[in-house]
Image (tube, rainbow, N blue to C red):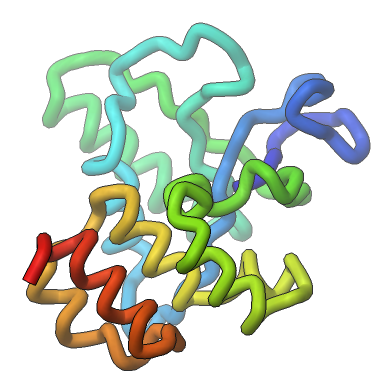
Length: 175
């Protein structure tokens, strides 16, 4: 979670200026194509809804001309598919400012025992925020992911035995 797309230096939640709340995605192109990433983006929100403020715009921040072209094409395809105007902005990436610590991993913050485990593993917030395992667990806790998938990757998430049991109980239901 962070801020991008504006001109204010060092934006913060209560002083965003013209930035938007965003996420930054680092992905492996050998596993997930840019097109696949765009498909996930379009399926994850309502781009036909006009934003009520700059803070909450729908945007794709491209890093090069190839990404820009593909994002614009995908936007046009979405407009046709949805038979509606798509308000998503296609913006050149300039800089990403991480949000304040209290804005990071909201779903995980509701589970102090699991949060404590990860904060012990990653005492530096930059490492905590960059952790794939932390992001995966936060996603599960936010309702994105199924029990069967969690069971296949639970051992790779770095949790203790009690942490794994707790997460499985939350996502899959009590044993």
